[in-house]
Amino acid sequence: MRKIDKTKPVLVTGATGYVAGWLVKKLVEEGCRVHAAVRDPENKEKLKFLDDLAAKSKGSITYFKSDLLHKGSYAEAMKGCELVFHTASPFTMDVKDAQKELVDPAKLGTRNVLEEANRCESVKRVVLTSSCAAIYGDNIDLQQTPNGIFTEEIWNSSSSLEHLAYSYSKTLAEKEAWEINKKQNNWDLVVINPSLVIGPAVNPMGVSSESFKLIKQFGNGILRTGVPKMGWGIVDVRDLAFAHFQAGFVSAAQGRHIINGHNTWYIELAKALQPKYGSTYPIPKKEMPKWMIWLMGPIINKAITRKFIARNIGYPWVGDNSKSIRELGVNYRPLSESINDMFQQLIDNKIIQAKS
Image 1 (cartoon, one colour):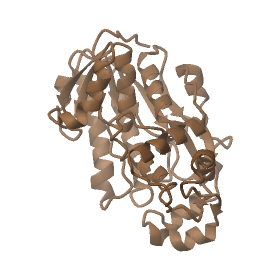
Image 2 (cartoon, helix red, strand yellow; image 1 turned 30 degrees about the horizontal axis):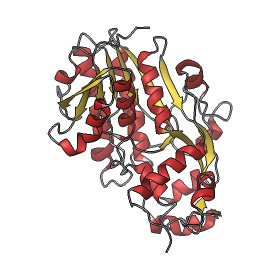
Image 3 (cartoon, helix red, strand yellow; image 1 turned 60 degrees about the vertical axis):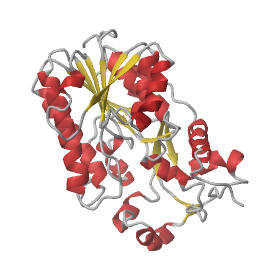
């Protein structure tokens, strides 16, 4: 249990990311000095939104050139920091070589950051952005849980390089983090395990994440005929950023934390968009039968395998968020607010257009 000094600089890896953007916003609003680890500190256009945040806040941002895959690349950025937020990690579903594009970068990136924390005497706490993907692989895994609910005690044992490689990479990366943490006593490890993240990007141009690709389908007609009957855990990116902040500064915070605002179904996201957007966009109104997804899914998208369909379609997702509420003080906002704010941002950026 370590108290973090807010006057010391705070490192955020992957500072231009979807989740990290909101975290940096919170940090500078609280007056923190943020060390932002980015690939290219000279790319003023990409960093403009962070500069604007700092200009309106009590805090400050200093940029450091860092590469997840280069050993020692975070040394300068970490100097003098008591608190490290490691949010940087590859998230893509479209991969040719899962080992090279997902597993290696996730594990090596985690190792590089945490081994740097071992070398940096000032570090007292690392907050790692993991995922609920490190807790479960398929929705059907819920049937193997002790009480029919995913909790922080459970680990994903059903994913592999061949099946849900992204989830497999998140599991291995988090396990790597706990292994490194166990071998030292200088810093605490606090882990954040979000479900599917939705909500607007703090960077108005940063609407290219996998979450935005998913929600875009509600407005571009791809899901016009219906959505799969599939359970989801959903969390707003702003609530997730707050959870990170609390995990950094609440002295008693420890272990893993499921950050999940809603146990819901795919169709509920569409229903939440209907009142405002249903008349002008092709928002789906019904669920697609499983047999149709079985026939068409693998043809439309090679990531939708028959194994994925068998183990996920028709099954609910239920995650226990009580630890995040009790220990981090997270107050989850309504699902309709998150999805409507996100959809409106896609419209404002002209990524989706109204029906003519």
